[in-house]
View 1 (cartoon, helix red, strand yellow):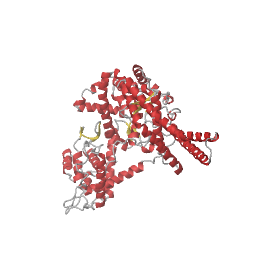
View 2 (cartoon, rainbow, N blue to C red):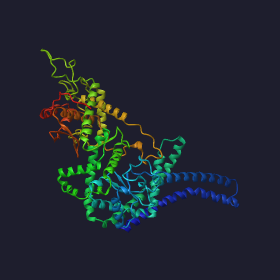
View 3 (cartoon, rainbow, N blue to C red):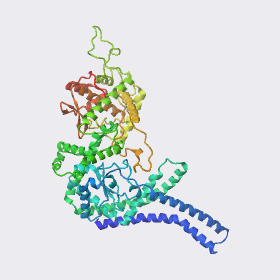
View 4 (cartoon, rainbow, N blue to C red):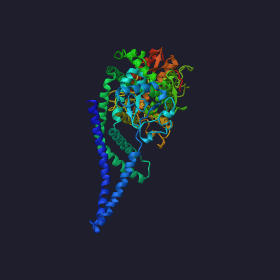
Length: 628
């Protein structure tokens, strides 16, 4: 499909959308036209008699009601605030080279230049219309869009028709300048069809209908207003369904025309750049789920996520032979050099990423502070492991599990002292191992309680685990060394947990974690007129992972306890792996074989593989560890 053909298809579909708007207007005016005819006929003496008089009254009242309803619907469609993607606005003073690159690209494509540039913490780029009056000056609060570097008075200026260019921030740090220009070419080319009046009018109408549907869905009103909003929403949804096919084909035609126009710009480089888009997406997703998410859960947000993408993808190119050659590009000029202060912009996009993907606060605070990559192992990994280990021992105390006796305590000859009355020491890994390992002769089938088991809790855990496994697919827990595969075995959703002690402990851990998260999460306030155009109460907008099951929580906590024992007894250190997140380093070497041994203990009650691993590394489980 050529440029002109795609534009003609888009314009034809836009006219079809506008015809639906015209039909809706005609239907609203039809009762009024009938009332005018009846009134004119009565005044001229053509429609006389009691029947015509009643008809004139009824039709006139109906016309007034329909006109009033149509006016209200039209007002809501025109005034409703369309949704806007959360972005970091970039002023021209903060990125003059980037603006110059985009304008030169628009000149080469012979299309209007975008009115502004914004960054999003995602691997995508698009054009966004922000010409609605609600999106113009005066500039909203800092909570609306996290301000970028430079003067704030220019961040939200909009021209009459030109849309805003939204660029994925990982592209700026990973791509070279030429690659970024090639990737943005088809996006910038979309400003040409966007300037066509019919297409622009059709887009405004569709966005208004969508915003009206969203506005009518607000339930925080009195019953009378809720009834009116239900009617407005029904009319808006009816028209939106009628426009759906035409609007989709219109956007398809616009995209085809833009892609065809961009063929003449850096075509060969675009093929290479598209490979970098896929690579950047893989590195960004891995960085968020394996590295950033554990920090967010600890109340810390990495302040250089985009720089971390470069480190993660460089590490990938070192490990994966399929990615060889990608690191050689690092000698060329990166696209982030087009920014005056890339560090400030990276920090702003990192905070927005934490807000969107985790639901964190909009501003830094003592309980929500940034962390540098150099501080990540000590500030996040070590602290998280010790916090989880402390929580695990608190739950064991709640269950009445005795602390392990001090094996070095002197005692006179004779039989060994009773461990239940012997002097106990601090928290040890041995206490966890002994509790999760069933004693000889104790049944381990689910539903049969042992000395510490509760069949009710066991059954509840089994049910919750099965329900969660059906929803989350095959993604295993992350954030601990060696967690690179599924947490369970095939058939977990059909068979209950074989270790009742693990089931009971996992259930209590889940309750404790839920209680702490509920206490740490402030209640969501209602959205006001000057709040961001997305729902703060619905954050995170894009959760990275489903909630962890109780079994995954127990696995994470036991792993944390093992790592604490390794750090306190053999001098192991916490580390950061750019692709796998927190990791344990023993003599400077990353530990990669811990996960299956912990799973064997948690799921089967078999501590032999883990004990053998502890002996091999010289880790003493009976020694107390320092907790967070």
